[in-house]
Length: 440
Image (tube, rainbow, N blue to C red; front, side):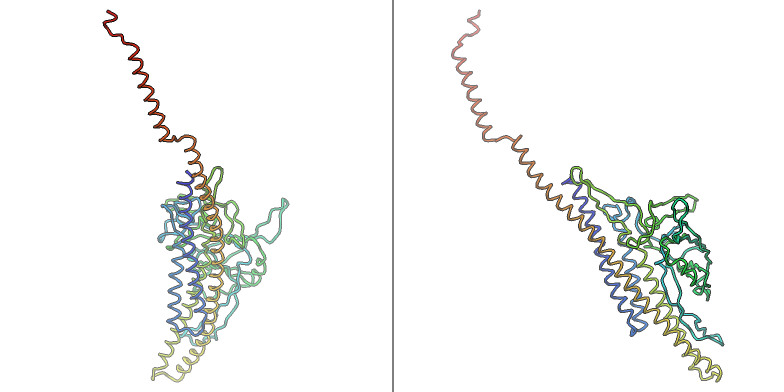
């Protein structure tokens, strides 16, 4: 059973897992190369668009690998081997209420361009670059309304950390003040899945080790990670059926990222009283970070492209010989402001590419750790297989010694016994000559 069924099945499962992780590692290497190229300020608009297109395709490919399966069982889904790690198609029939565990270190300092130039406006201000404090959630395209609870180290009488709430204000991405909260405010931008902290609020929570953000998402795109594999969440279907997905210990952990959920180790018995974990769980190799980093790059490139289009429109208008002197001066001023806007947005775009570099390296490290762990278990399995193969040969020899017969020796003994038997019959017939007539 061990040699002929369990171990070969385990090897096939782990081979499938290793193959997928190898592909992911290669994709991340390519992503890293593209991000390095994108950080180059000599790229043309066509170059940037080509890089973004490739990055988007590579992102999709990474998450597709999360749905690798062996004999119809998904290898990265823990015990839920019948449930894919990512959505296979656009899904709208479920509404997820997700609680995502984060910490103060997840709030990053970003730069945003304010006072964007409007070609039609008569009195544009010079664009400026301002610092914002952002927390990026695992998903975008969320529904308005989110809650935050955090801990600041205070404990109640029984030693439990006290959770405190933060008030959140919903903001639409089109709102010019979406990235300009007051010092004591927190803005939630549902379209991009971002929380923007005012200066005082950032100082208040930046050292917190436990920040839980609860939000709702209904539409999931193809290849988005399924929340039930990562977070505490509740899924409500269109007919009102509610299904809870809970993790035993969902506290933030910097190395694991997105929380520590209960182990879902699939173990095969590979020898008498010896079990081996054969699976690698999705959160050990696939995170939301790389997808969200690519989203940031796409948005930054789109912003630069928008400014370039406005500059091209102004140049086109300046070619009109019928322009009044005042209108020409206004457009020349707008062009100067757009050039400043272009410079600022280009800087942010290059920072986004640099962030992609660090994110791809971080995920590569994570995948390499998963591959090393898998490789260690795989080597143990091969050693066990080798030992059992040797034992099988030894036991077959022993069984043969105890139970098998020597065919030549057996034939000799049988022939000898048959000869003796026939001789006995012949001697008896000669000694006893009686016939039926002797008894009549």
